[in-house]
Image (cartoon, rainbow, N blue to C red; front, side, top):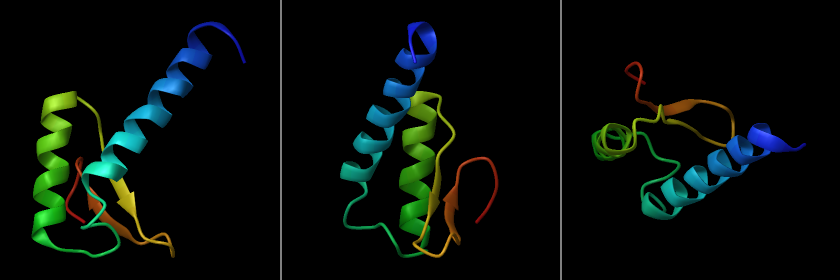
Length: 66
């Protein structure tokens, strides 16, 4: 993969890693704090954030309530 697609892919990975590190102690639990932090990060970065648990259950999604 080259050009803008590679940069976009790298950017998505970097964004995911930053979000994972920021939410490390809240991941894998569905609670209001996880949703609120996800919403804050989404507003600040203009990114949609969807967090899934290991079974694929949505724990937080900034475009709709989880």
